[in-house]
Length: 245
Image (tube, rainbow, N blue to C red):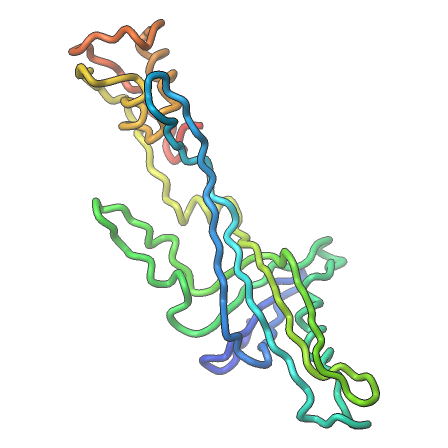
C-alpha cells in the first residue's frame, strides 16, 4: 500500500511494474497548468453557408507542473549536499523500467478540491458528467526539463527547478466507464417536415450530421435532395454503448 504524505503536501506516486513508489515533493508547486484539446471535423453540407462541426475525439489532457528543489541549507562549502538527491528521484520517472519495458505511469496528488473534482453532477438538460470527476491526475511524463541555478564553491549543484509535462493516461475500460456513453438502442421513427434534410435528422438522433447516409440506406433513398414532407423515416438503431463512426 502507498502511504501518503501529510495533508496539504503534494506528492507523486509512480506505478512501476514491480510496485508503487511514493515521492513527496520538497516544496509544493506555486502553479499548475492544465490543457485539454478537442478534435472536430468539418462536415460540408451543400447549400449551407458554412460547414458543420462534428466531434471526433478528445486529445490527451496535459498537466504542467514546476517543482522547486533546494539543498543550500546544508551549506555551501565542503559539506554541501547535491540537489540531485531531490531531482534524480523525479528524473528517474522518465527512465525505462527493465521489467515494464517503459517508463512508469504516475499520479500527481495534492490536497482536497483538486481541479476537476467539482465537475457538476448534473448540467442543464440533465446531462451527467460526474463520472469524469477526479481527485488526482494520472499520466505519463511527456517532457521533463531540469534547470540548475545555484552551485557551491566546489561545483556541487544546490538549487534546481524541474518542469514536468504529464500527458493523461487512461485505459480503454476506464474511459468507457467514465463516459457512460449512450446512444439509440432501438429504431426510431421520424416524420419529415418541410425544413428537414437527412443531415438534420442524423444530427437530431445521432448528434452526427455526417451519418445521414445511414438514414438514407435504411429508407432506400437514392437522392437525399428529393424528400417529401410528411414522409415517415426509419432511423436505425446504433449498437449500445457506441456512437456511430
